[in-house]
Figure 1: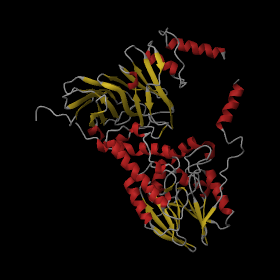
Figure 2 (figure 1 turned 180 degrees about the vertical axis):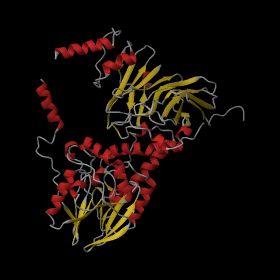
Figure 3 (figure 1 turned 180 degrees about the horizontal axis):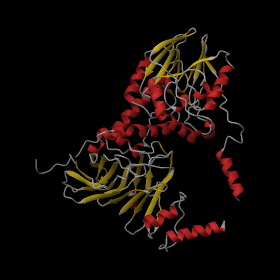
Figure 4 (figure 1 turned 90 degrees about the vertical axis):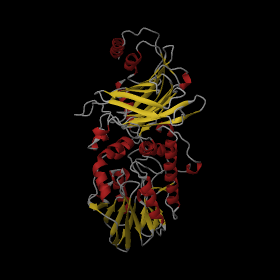
Length: 309
Length: 266
């Protein structure tokens, strides 16, 4: 009896086990000259996708390979590095990490031999919350995380233009999605790695969001000359529709929560509130909406309840 | 195996010596704590699992320190008392609520320590407890994390401050919705070096002192707890009063205006 129970627990705890070793099966997609992206799913972190929900990328320059985001786990970083080696034999020159969320940097261990650059606010955030976020990723995606430990970025960057080979990269510090969001515009190709600020057909995530600042960041990106926009989650596009979609969602979300708070609603009543049809095509819609209610509601609520003693 | 069953039966008998009624219906949430909580919370009173008591909460706790929950037993008609509890929390009872002149509906936020069944029980005048609930998944740790309150040097100056507001009655039942927030760290006592410090009682009254809703509040309620109630004050009442106290003798006192009520006096 006990043996059967053990066997059952083993089987149910390791769905990937029967199907062989876990692999992300990463395939670099060329999106512009010298520029590739690994397209993630438009889902939330799950045990079947192993946390592969991001669009990390790389640019091959005469000065080495520039990597943008390292993915959700050590395994992802290692597979990324192996996949890059199928495209070029140039060494990795530098890694950029756009913000503190775990899927952007938990693959850092696979790039420990090169400089890993991030904004000061991102580095502070990873120092403060990195361990907790790593633990939560183990809970959410399980065995895919094996061997993953936080590695804080090693180099601080600021708003600037940097040149690698023939590529001029404009580092654009923004805020709103988190306290420090790095967007990278390759002025040579017109490719914009938008960081966490732009979502494309995937519902924006708001655990560290300031909606007002975020809308201002979208305006800043909207003013750039862009040929290809790489949102960090969702479809890659050759237009700016994803900026408009992200703006539309954030504006609706903020306005709706404020209106409902003003009308006396309780947070629990917002969980199943209707979402307009035009957002139906965005991935993880209801789940991310509920998470956003949890993130944004308390402050909005406090503002509509006057002091009475 | 048989020995285990015998031990479980003995344990059940010891923890519930007085209960001798008909066997309870099976717990639809299959909680390992149900056999312990049943006598503790309901004694020998009859219980039934009842979909008319609804519990609205997320499936996953995004913030383990503040999970929104709304319990609604209006479909039962008259309800004398409600209990909100999370089976696997270190302190299962979140609050008790007597809707004296209020609808049997209450919403708040609470701390969750691990994934748990979350339930509301409502006692009807015939003495039967009607229980509804759902499973809540959580990364957990909400009961053993220090409150953010202490980050502010002047936190003690603000304990007991109340923010509140009432909304004019609408709908057929003419209930007045009232929402209020009390500034309080609501310490569970489970964080090393921080003693238990939480609000124990809150009563919402008419202007003339008649109790409309009585709350017995407990450790799991979130820091700076927020409540939503629907009360039926006397027709001419121009404000509600809130009074209460914490476990260290601190008082809560506030008046929430009903600005749409026209009084005879200017």
